[in-house]
Length: 315
Image 1 (cartoon, one colour):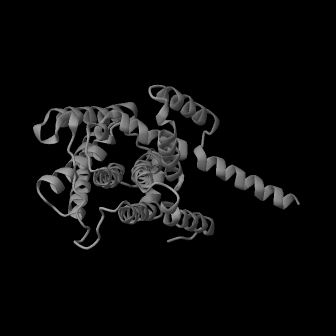
Image 2 (cartoon, one colour; image 1 turned 90 degrees about the vertical axis):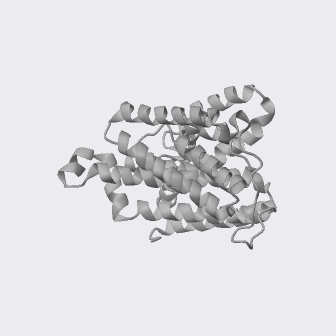
Image 3 (spheres, helix red, strand yellow; image 1 turned 90 degrees about the horizontal axis):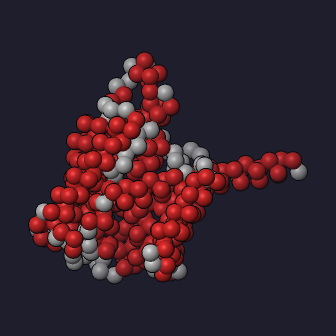
């Protein structure tokens, strides 16, 4: 499964950092990074490897957050079942939306996803069981499997890390499977993939459902961490945020979305004291990064690695 030694080293280094991080960084901030890293990785599966741009991915993230909060708080379900229920609902929603939009091309498909997201935002804002602008709160942190007490932030962090690793491992396996190779072929040259006999729409739909379900797991986990499901989770701005994370990290790279999520969440945390000016500063930073680092942070790291290799070879 892990054939590339370079990727093994990167993965082991990131895992070591993740395991030790709670000793140096506030665990809740780290958990937020992990949730958005999984969300961005799921989105990258769709955009970076299937070539499908969705402007409405917040509907999967936010819907799962509401379902998870409702099942855990109101219905009294165990935490793990609430998270799985959120992911399942997001996958079903992805099946419905994907079946309607993947037959369209370009901007038309993208705008359909945005339209669905806006309709769901109105539903969550108006429905009485969602809490309106106040959202659903507080979502109780019930013990995982009846044994693991997640009321402690550090304990919950390692549970969230396990969820992230499971989701990221699934994405990695999909990308490096024959299915993932077909997705890349569709992304690079769809007419040729059709001429080779592949059912392009079916492959796109499966990718859409996988991306939606994993985005839902990320949203449901975030609702447990912050004990809240709110309109922010399903707002179109959340869709824009995950696109930026993927762009900054590097579209089509394995670890790019992780770095993009860490960079953006960390930046938002550092700039929080600027008040309304934070949006202006963020916009300038994003604009500079997108123009200067066309391949994202991972692209910059790859260029530096090649430069170092050439320098060593010349010596």
